[in-house]
Length: 616
Image (tube, rainbow, N blue to C red):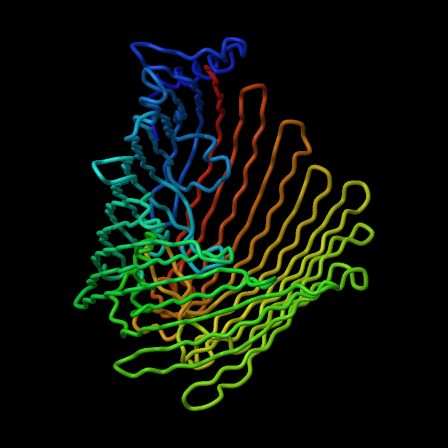
């Protein structure tokens, strides 16, 4: 925040006068601004001045009269196909505070440029940095614990359409860093990820299109999330990913696609270290015989646990522990077809074979199944039902029948808009031959437009999934929400609860899609509530208030065990011509439920005025 001396208060007052006094017709033109080859195609800005206060239970209070603003521009140098660019920056931007979510001074910038766009070697450059962003870190599907973050991003990519005998060679480099802090808990997480890669494609050899790529990632993380804000533990990791893809046309309007991957990862966390090498080959065939569409696929992976961790790291979700999972390979072969009968009947059938390889031992099973879908049409308008059954057998005998069922109902009757959905799956095969899963999920909603502009809607959902051969692996989620509105005002309420197992990453918890993952999984659970009200009853004025509550249940996730977070927000915005008068406040109370310590409280408020400018 910019601190103003006593003499500078007059400058702030003068700025407000100038902001209000600039005539609207002096701004805006279709012509761009150019000098020495630089052409600015658009230039817009906002300026703000206001008074804010911040105080918390563990810090001294601050009160400031400050200035802020934002700037956005874009254009090109000599020719758009030679060099074009877009840039923006903001500091103490009033608009970013109007939603009452930024607990710290928000500021940042971004820049992107497209170079040599009209040539055979186009490139892109991107960089940006932000400070004081507010967000949440916690349980999937819930509000989560209030957090703040700083981020830095840089990236360069270049395409060479033809280099000697090579075609469409693309290279890239990225350098991203982030710092996250969960307020009131003394918990931080830092990550620094560097990656570079190269890819090529567009070749055709004997009718086979060929493409390939390579990507390398270095990551460094440090966090004290696991032990509740105590000792900071760090980790490093590398991932090397290779990919090759090809395909070919087949008779009977068929098509073959093949892709192969190899990923090599090394991870170190504390005294633990791990190394994973995973190879994967996927092949798919699609064709048509008479009126029957035929599809078949073969998928092989020699390290399913390692591949899952590697894919998380490749996506930027760095796993915060070393991976020493057992090496398990899988082979899946599947063929399926479908047919449409008269009277809204659609059937599918399939057969599959799955093998699992562990320590020289091979376990396999064969499955057969079929589904039938029926749309009831005019008899029960809006109702569609899908039902199916499958059976599987392994070396030791029959594994038992499994079932799937889906029912969907959509109907509009006399102003009532209704929707309901039910999904049930029993003994569905997972990626591992020795594991099956069962799940149930249902959701429903109803909306009604009443007289005189009154409208309400209610929705609810429930889901549960369990891996049948492993106790304590069930996950669940449930939610309920309601909204009522009347003309220019509305009120809402929501409730959510979820739990299960997840992998701890630098960006949050990631649910586990594969059963039996050792070492890296952690149980989680919690619930959250939220409520809000807003109105636009007064012309050019908007008012909004909100409340949310998050509670985590007992877990082994250190800092996320038994915590409570409550947030109150309020904002008001009044627009007069190009002036925005803003007032907002936010209060966060966050701490550990089981602790005798008083929860940490953060309170911020802001009163100010801003004006936007559109120069051209």
